[in-house]
Length: 358
Image (tube, rainbow, N blue to C red):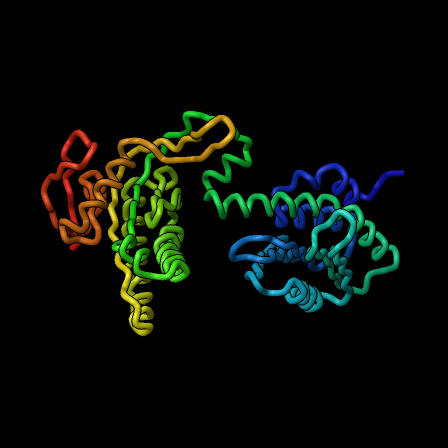
């Protein structure tokens, strides 16, 4: 006896789906091929992440597209599933929903639901129940992979997480990346940590990192490292050219400044001192390598470009500017700059032409 197309897919191919979007789209297509009168489908899964708690994918038959809704941390799974069910009911008249919470092989919070242009027949409802039974195992695997990816990205960053998930678990030379580099450092952190309660120091650090890292991500950059109270980020050159990468880095600096200004107004109202930071921008190549001991590895950035941008940031205070640009970075942007001459940087052989923002 030949299995329905949807069940064959769940047995043979579903474990290879990269995410809920692909899973729901492929499964819906096979159900439609079985002449199911579907008008919509929904899949909700838990997504352990510092910001996101649940992910919900909503599929429409008339467009064949999937939209995604995110449930933020500390929202309840029940609420997110309730939203999905209400959406299904708004599209059609027949709704079949299967909750996998605590079910065999599926993760808590998983829900798979469908709606049709008319009430489902007994045979159609039975097929959907079989689909839910066969879907439990691949959905559990999908949830596990999604959780692993989310946690690795949260702790390692997107670039390193991708490498780890691809199985890079040995010391390797790494990849050469050409990018606009940004190094930013919080001013007066040593004094702050010596004179302030530890919890307040952590709160201040988190607020600072939210502003600078958030700005980097908004403009297409990647945070590679948190180094004490400093941040190393890149705006890779590839899909965009050097000028576009440098201009994105500048916009990120402006956004971080605006965010810190707002934060400092709040801190002033609380009678706590303001936070300031210095930033350096450089254009060059770096090596993103997997280094360490045989059984304890870390991804790190090395190379002359990394050394230069970190040393350049150290000139912000003595030169009296909150943002400094190297000559190679300055050559790529159009806005007027203040030339500050050439300066020797510790550990860098050649003097560096230095510019400041007007």
